[in-house]
Amino acid sequence: MKLALSAALSLLLIGTAAAGQSNVSIGKLRLADAATDACLANCASQNDACKRVCPTTLGAPCQSACDSQAQTCRQGCRNR
Image (cartoon, rainbow, N blue to C red):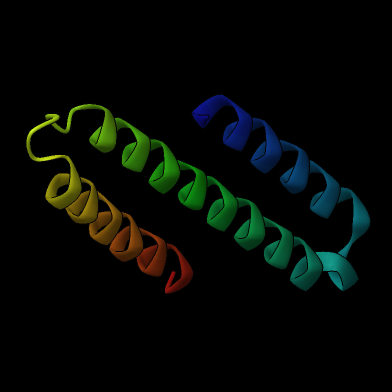
């Protein structure tokens, strides 16, 4: 995940430097979109991991807590 984000950031910076000043805001938007996408993917991954460790006897409350935590995570991604 970090490697993909680093590669995208590197390509974006190289492209922005080569394109000149007119595409800087477009580049920032693309970077923000990539960072948000990576953040949301991380939230989904954490949610899956959380649900995997829920015991069978407490499945519903545990999974509900995982979903609540994931929702908070996703909201944090959008507020960046």
